Length: 211
Image (tube, rainbow, N blue to C red; front, side, top):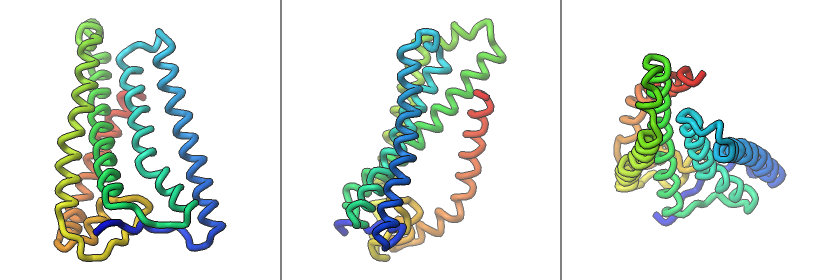
């Protein structure tokens, strides 16, 4: 296996160009929005608080997440190709898992930050001091490395005997498991709903804490 074939949105050349333009608009909107957040937090000293520090990290994560999948899909549409190299697919899976893990780690930290601000307001500055915030942020970023390495390694350690066509515009984990030679896809289907439910609950808790 030297490459995978990603799902094409259309075989019509005009629609392929339209797809790339739409994705380009979405990508630029996400890029500009997140860069503005990062610049504002860095430049405005009034925003040098734990809440905005963590929001800045989330913006960096958003930039990384969309940059992992969208540019490759745009390039494939413009070049009228569907291929992605084996190494490129491994990198997509690794980075995709990495950003998801770190994202949820920061949502958990942000929920804790709001808990301290609401339940222990008099001790907030002591607990959420600069050193603690930097340490928690560093831990969140580092935590994604072993988890994404292990998960990506487990996926690509499996033999692929169902062809090399991935029914998604990027190297999606469920679709990769679908073309492996074992029952990994069925196991993923059985446990996927539970994992998604837990993820939604964590995300909702973090969002309500900052709402």
